[in-house]
Image 1 (cartoon, rainbow, N blue to C red):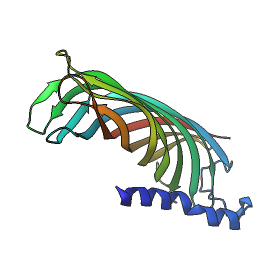
Image 2: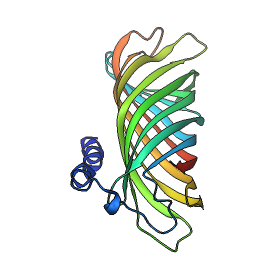
Image 3: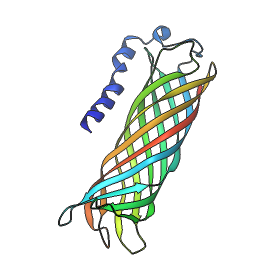
Image 4: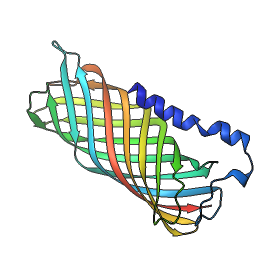
Length: 232
């Protein structure tokens, strides 16, 4: 976990010195086919296909708790600016809605059918790098982001057992990679994979009856995002 956070922070910090040294547009990354405009904005729609939350209930003895979510969806809106050497930075606001599918208590292989949901909203700061390819139908990119995520989640079954509840803000980080397909010099369609994680989420959890134990949960969601981006 610490390595992932450190990598995300390093990626976000890398271009700052280069940007300070070159304030003019002469060093701006401008491959063939791009408009050369310094800013961009876009929309992304997300299909979330791997989603889960895990924690340890501090009962006697401590018991592992794992909640699985069905496929969900969401989207994001973002604005950004191009930096030298192929980097770009963006401010993104994203949202996820994830219905609960099942809960596993104690890792014994028995999944309890549960009802509930997880809603996640997060403002993120992302740094991306466009690989300098030309004469290629799509341009690959990779990126990472840091931000804060508000998570509202609950998981319970029809027998009155309340397994997990939370509603709070926490630090989030993500990694992404994908392809850009040009529609014109100033617009493109994007397709990317996103891995987003939120750790140490303050929650109430339980293994039977009410969720009465204070616990820390880890939320993870992975998605495929399709988007439309335009230069400004």
